Image (cartoon, rainbow, N blue to C red; front, side, top):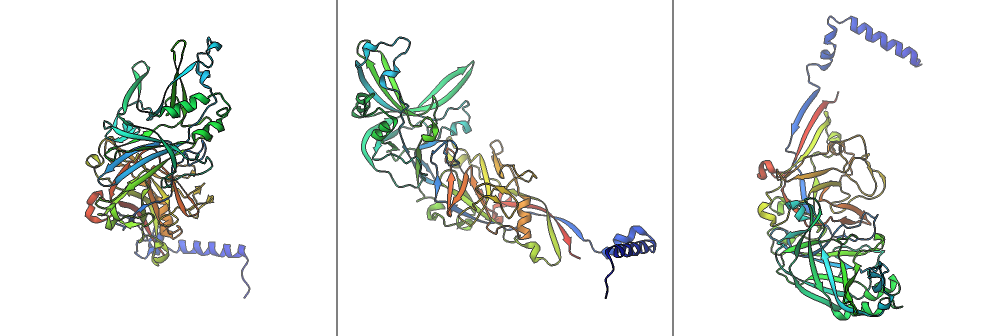
Length: 516
């Protein structure tokens, strides 16, 4: 049978439609007649879709200060021991190079009137390790948390040792790196941190804590005596002689974890070598920073060790082995720095449109909602929940997807799968929840695009990660996480109905379109 030309077919259809319309007594009933008394479109709201949740202790967490541009550059080092009844005991140890900017001892003399006759007449005085917390301009709880967590009035015993070999500036170090070998003890002291207030303008101040440890005179004299001589004539020679430092806290009853500023600034930490001129007894000093200039040559990292023994829920958790929250008191445990995150999935929604033969589900809005437990009694002094909680698309229950280009969800990404905010512009930041201190809760997060893809069955089927203020990436299957500068933590009730209105919920507004 010979088919009609396209133009003839179009004319035939238009004529048929016209004949149909003119044959109706009431043209406004055309659509109603087609529906056959059935409602084809219905709108719904539900917030009881099951959410499968488990807590994951990630293993490969990078906090290396490697260079100024890499995403792995940590912002703060941490030192001390922090005890938490829910999150265990965490010990933080600093490993750092010591850098020389090229100045000789004599170079620190007042250049306005140099007296060359004083050359060789300097007298060594002492050498001190100076540790400072970041500067803050307010003394509210969140600002104080930038300097320390726990009891800042307690004393601590700081131990300083010389490393047996230099840190590798091309290497990424992780919090679980084995202890580096040391050659000698350079100093140990019982220290009470000093809170300092500095005026920077009219009624304007900045604040920080400072800790000082006097080091061995033999160590100080070895630098003093060789300054300007061939043994210490170059930066490489200096760093090869010093090797680096291991800085730790000895007393196990310490109850604070300090954030140490190793960024290159007037406030940064370093070694101060003091000396005097014999003729005038005028005090002089030279500083050797723990951060280099340029920053790209710097190297330090924090080793974190957490003992979960004795905690009511986390005592059995193991690295990279997701533990269902039903085994954790129906609670989600999230902590910055140590790598405690949460894996989420929505099993009853995945592939719904493929499996439903009668209708299609169209997401109008999908909103993830939760309320953290009241942290006031849980976290103690100078501690706050994470300022942001981020959502990332998982590659598996313990790792994140990696690569470059576009995911099968159509979202742009560079090194991982972020969930972007619901906007047409793919330059939007990843989806995150912001902590609201006045309400002791987090903002809601909208993930309509992700849930629609999940319902359509076009997601990657691996669920989501919720983590605290991290920058994450995946390299050869190992999760790499950059912490910010604290061990901020939060406990959130999971989606079990026993948790009531504070439970984790997906508020889903959707439309059902009947298939015809």
